[in-house]
Image (tube, rainbow, N blue to C red):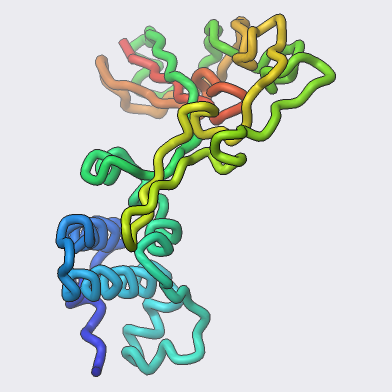
Amino acid sequence: MSKRDYYEVLGVSRDASPEQLKKAFRKAALKCHPDRNPGDAEAEARFKEVAEAYDVLSDQRKRARYDQFGHAGLSGMSGHEFTGFDDIFRHFADIFGGAGFESVFGGGRPRARTGAHRRIQIELSFEEASAGVEQSVEITRNESCSTCAGSGSKPGTRPVTCPYCGGRGEIQHRQGFFVMRQTCSNCRGSGQVISDPCPACRGSGREQRRVKVQLHVPPGVADGQRLIVRGEGDPGENNAPRGDLYCDIH
């Protein structure tokens, strides 16, 4: 049977932007997800069809070939063959891993436990706000523990593999054809547990210190606007990624 046009499958125009493609794919995939359509073979086929369409159109090289030659132009090109719904989720984890997907199906995959955000106030003169300014600010935030280098373990020891999840950071529950995943409650998704905590940070891998952060304030900012400096907030536990620094401008 001939394949449908990929743009038609996703319900977008041929000049759709990457963001429009992503939004259309997520909407279509959630609509025809098997958990929402139990026993519906057509919904299962549609689910795989929209994944295939997005896999091609989200790749600039594949999309160019498809736009010029159609489905025949993709012959011989390396691509991803989806073996099941779980494979689709793994391949597009950045789309299905968000809170929106987890709130619908109560699952999702463990994500890096990003650290907390920090918030500060910045006062600028009218001239600085108009022209922009480079500014250094001093803040108190959590840093990697100097005793254990952020590992959370007592010096000379290492975290051990979590016995509950076997180091995967998640617990799997099979329900018929589907596999549901939940973050392991014992290791909170890290896949490891600290058997001998660092005495300085008590296993958190963090300690508070005063640090200087360099800010680049662009020209034309207005009172009440917020500057977000990515990765300058607190680190997560055991060297997980940092949160962001929110700078409210006055």
